[in-house]
Length: 394
Image (tube, rainbow, N blue to C red; front, top):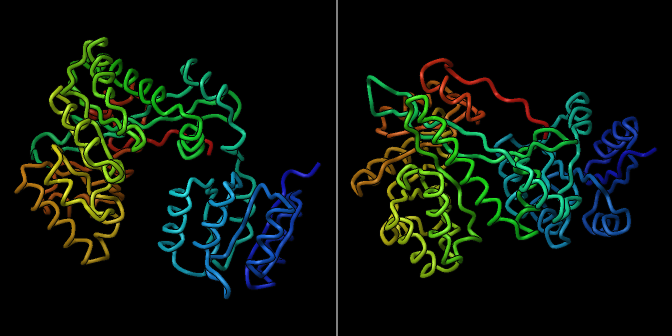
């Protein structure tokens, strides 16, 4: 039985033939083309479950192809290939994710047959196959679990143990295993379940805060609030009520908002965020530096922290411009009485630079991957240096 239908577009016929041969050997039905117009026709006729696309085509480019898939409301898994460097591939992957597409992975040319086979063999899980009932039931059954990524304290020469963590949701799926959020958050947004999911995450975080306190560890948890929820005027009341029900201080919950969340309706967002602060919550502006109005938002809205986006942090080892931006952002934030957290730390050199730059906190895989709540205490008290990653099936 054919496993899936794979559509390849690349201006190099040899690449199309190579990918097609490997895919057929893996029991995929395959169609291929070297032209965008033919790709559009094949996409609608062939109805692929996987698309493999080159980023650089003579008559179009990969971003335009991603726009086409977005316009088609595609649930197809997408694999990007290119001879360009990995940064360009990963940037294009993020574009696809922002469009709500199901990005399966990236491959750099020349493509290694083992890498292609491995990516094609990775478990498939389509957002389009998830029903409202399934997601609703997953929330009700507690299948959507919360893992926590520690933030290291960089300002204390004596104690750099984490006092804060970021709550990150996972789906403990009964069939597909532990799924990362890129596998289901789009479906959550499409099915209108963002608010129930947020309630579940906050409730789980509050309960975990109380468990940590039993071990003598006072922790704060950052919770991400989706931009779509910044139109809900009762949201501060709901989150405050959940904290009260679980006997947790609102000051132990940090509300993380991306800049896009305050751009559509600034007046309403200002209303909601101000009420969060009045209720004792702390506010953090996430992904700082990736938008166009960050300084305006820092000036007008009651944030207490900014998080420097990982796209800058990951480049500080090799890029002087990135180092300048991190230093300048940190200095500006401190002059505005804001604390600074750097995301995406992947090496000891990154961490040392951030200390010298004056950042207050840092998080990233070098410090710890997101881990289960019960493992945080061991990590916080020095039982682990850099936590082992939990094995997730994507």
